[in-house]
Image (cartoon, rainbow, N blue to C red; front, side, top):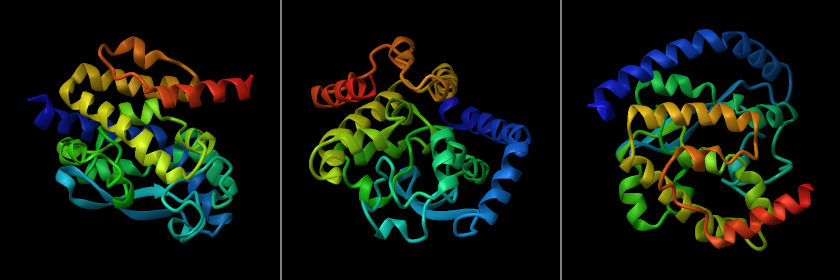
Length: 235
C-alpha cells in the first residue's frame, strides 16, 4: 500500500510543506538568477521517468544555455566552465533541485526515488537495470544520489573518457543501488533517505548510509581506488 497511495499522499504533503519552509530561499535565488548569468530562473529538460516515460524536469538555472551540447555534454565535471557563478553555489548546496517540488506536485516525481536521467545517460545502464529502475517514480533524492553525492568529482578524477567511466563503472553500481532501493522500499527506508540527504550535505564524507542500511551494495574496486585517490588529494 505504501508504494502507491500512501507514498503519493506523503509526497504531496511534504512538497507543500517544503514550498512554505523554503520560500525565504526561493525568492532570493530567483532574484539572483534574474540579475546574473544569462538572466533565466528556470530551465526544463526531458528526463526518463516512471515506467520509462519522458517528462519535463524543473530546475534552477546553473549552467550556460545549450550546455548539453558543449563540453562534456550531459556530464558535469569539477570546475566545469559551463557552470555559472551563482550556479556553483546552487549545485553545491543542492538548492538547484528545489523546483522539482513542482514535479512532485504534478505527479511525475516523488520525494525519494531513483534520479531521473537524460536519455543519453539512461542508456548507459545495463539492460536489466533499464527495464526496472523506473518501476518506482524518480525522486528528488535517493540512495544513488546520496552515494554519488559528489559525482562531478568522481568523474573528474577518473582517467580517460568521462562518459566511458560513467558507463562502465558508475552507471552499473548506481543501477544496483536503485534496484536495492526498490526491493527495500518502505516508509522507514524513505524517511532514513531523507535524513541521510540532509546529513551528507552537512557532512560530505559521511559513511552514514552504509551504517543505516543493511545489504547496501558496496562500491566496486575501481570506485574504491578513485575514492582513495580523492582522499589523498584532499589531505
